[in-house]
Amino acid sequence: MIVDKVLVIGLGLIGGSFACALKKAGACRQVLGNSRSAETVTKALERQVIDHGSSDLQVLLPELQSGDVIVVATP
Image (cartoon, rainbow, N blue to C red; front, side, top):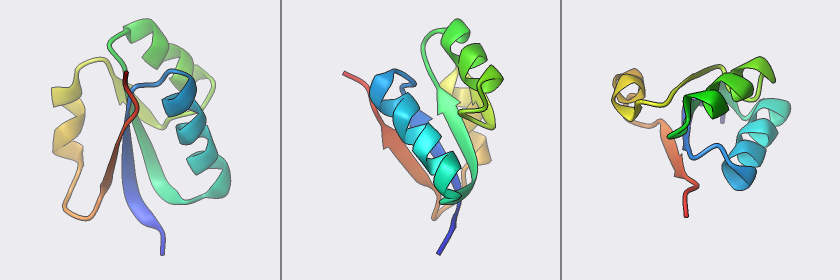
C-alpha cells in the first residue's frame, strides 16, 4: 500500500534522511517537509528531498487528509 502524502516535521539529519528514503523507495506519492528555517526548506526542495515544503506548518496542514502520515523528527 502506498500512502498519498507524508509530512516530515523537522528536516535535520533524521527527518531529512527519512524524507530522502521515502522518496527513493517510492513509499508515498508526495513528501511534504517543514523546518523552522526557510533556508533548510529551500535546500531540501533543491536537492529533491521533498516535493513541497514550508517553514510555516499552517501552510502544509490543509494539504493533508485523513489517512496521511505525519512524522515528527524534532529534538
